Image 1 (spheres, helix red, strand yellow):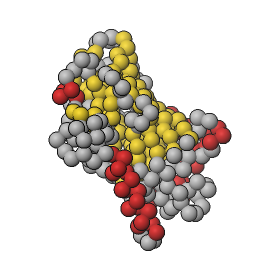
Image 2 (cartoon, chains in turn purple, cyan):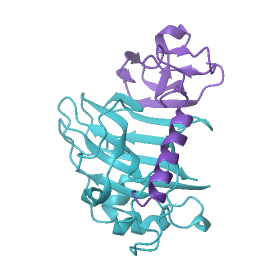
Image 3 (cartoon, rainbow over the protein chains, first blue to last red):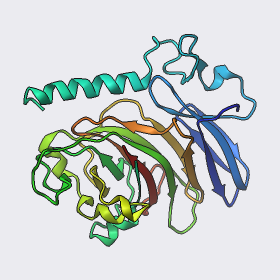
Image 4 (cartoon, chains in turn red, orange):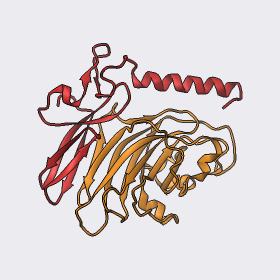
Length: 101
Length: 185
């Protein structure tokens, strides 16, 4: 895929089946199998991308932030994961300043 | 930003034997923000001081099964954990006191995160969807490397963290080996 968010390498001495992301099961051949991945911009889930698979099979592109998202987040609102993280940290810092965390 | 490498065989070196797989998940490697009441989580070696939580990122995962080849499979995943308060002490195999040994660059020193390997305690896993998941044949090994900006991140919030877990699905009851590389910011 274009601009992958990572890659996976599976080394198998023989043909085997691999379940990726609890979404799909693929047959891999003996030897080394390489798979591109992307990390969902909304929930940070890592998705393995099947070569030449249509985008609908591996997720979607958010039309707001223009980033790849996983099937779980495809129909949800656009809340980037890093924004969620920042909010969580701000809440923690506030609670801590009150002596509550 | 300091990078650290942690293998569950390191946990064995420090006295926690690798858990044999069963049909329930086992946390193989745990990386989390500690809390000030976790003695082994304090960077000063156990003294409870002003605790500086840090955001962390897992950017490399390697998993495999060191056992006699057979046709069964294992389910691996990374879950968020919420090891609240003192319950974090219930994680077996805490390695934080030895964390100065895990730095990729020895000049970086100790990790501030709470680290454990081969824990058998699963009570603190947040029951939400996994961040990374793969089920592979017992004979296969797997490695995932994140591109910059696509790592698995946990917030700088007390008790938040990530756990790499394995499930001996099928009939696998042997041990597993795993290595995680993470970064503290």
